[in-house]
Image 1 (cartoon, rainbow, N blue to C red):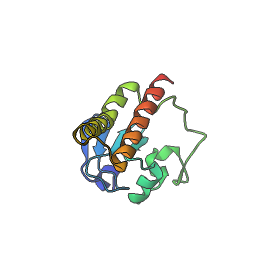
Image 2: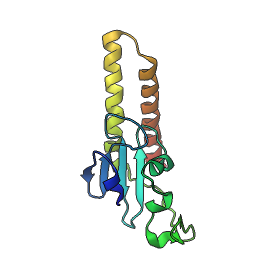
Image 3: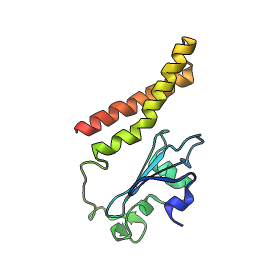
Image 4: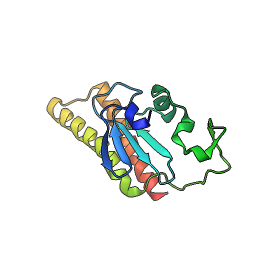
Length: 143
């Protein structure tokens, strides 16, 4: 079964790029970004903070399943001698659509603060997480 067939709420956002519900955590919005590289490598990022290993486990997959078959050693693990190092997995232009959810999260929390005059612990934690991802993306784009 393909990766996309195992996911809920899949929608294509660009050629070789999809959004879906993350299978590793309960959520109300598509938090999982999936990209397929030209060589067949699958990249995943959960904006809820789940790690790739957690996501693969929730899908009953191995991390090796995210790499092309010709990169695997005995079909189980990536052959690290054949893996080419890439400077960046994403180009900076791909970061803005991915960060739109974090920017929306910040705007919603600011609206809640303006209405109530305070922020809950949960909102504060979400705000810090979103701001950290935005700052990490800014740094990533300048590396």
